[in-house]
Amino acid sequence: MEVISSDKNSPEKQQDLIIQAQELDAQVDPQKLHGVPCRSKKEHDYVTTMISHPKNLKEEEHKKRMPMALEEHINRMEMAKEEHMKRMEMAKNEHMKHMEMAEEEHKIKLEIHQEKLKCAKIEREILELKKACDM
Image (cartoon, rainbow, N blue to C red):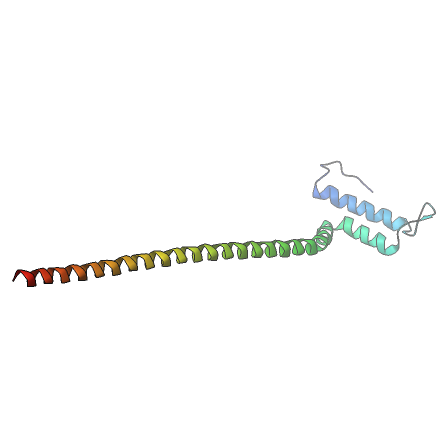
């Protein structure tokens, strides 16, 4: 067993450490360490695999966090949907207010226009009567 004295984080160094750990594991009975029972074979193999393969560790972490992230995403989407519905309701109410105001304004303008028409009609009748009297 030879230890390479290079950078701790180099791939070669990590590979050597993995090989050393595997050699030591082969020498030690996983059921007993100094006569004391330790992890089960299944747990030992799991830990060894996780140490040997960081990708597996990342996948396990991902599997643990994925349901929480999915639930959080669903909650955020529901909150966004509720917020959207509130905003849409507010916009609808605001639009209805504007429409009612516009309708009232239109009615007032229509009444004014009708009054002007009545006034014009009366003025025309007065002018016709004046013409008739002057003749």
